[in-house]
Length: 164
Image 1 (cartoon, rainbow, N blue to C red):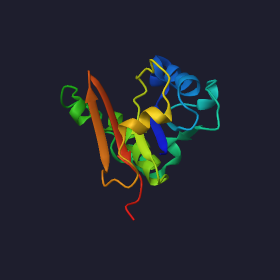
Image 2 (cartoon, rainbow, N blue to C red):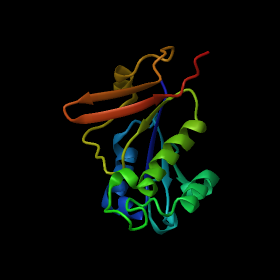
Image 3 (spheres, one colour):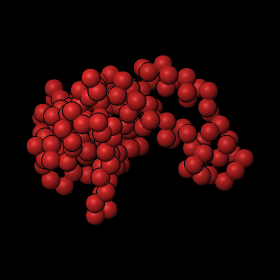
Image 4 (tube, rainbow, N blue to C red):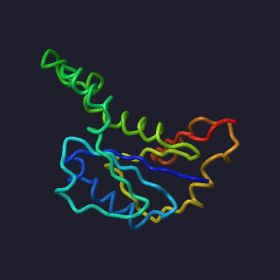
């Protein structure tokens, strides 16, 4: 089967752990797995990030719908522009990049399982496509998404295979 991993980061997330995750993609993950890495509110040219033919970088500010979303929702910062005490439930601006990265990657890719990996995750062992094969239903499955919860670990993936 085919797999694409999507992640998204800004400069703060990149410096906190994102760069380590990107290094893990290059060194601990099977090269048969594609990585779509979206970034926002930063100049990626200021960083030396892993380069490989299966690691791709995309600026969310090149996605017109994302730019419009940010421009039209400046008050939805978790405080409704300072009116209420901060709550993550009202922070559309923080959740937006992840949603747009997953959506954009899904729109641009077919015939694969799409996995979201948070930039604060860590890879503790090598990840092979054959290992992922054991987790996911075969291509002809009608399963649209899969979420696996085990020992405090969460894995969420979306089926991007067409149901022809």
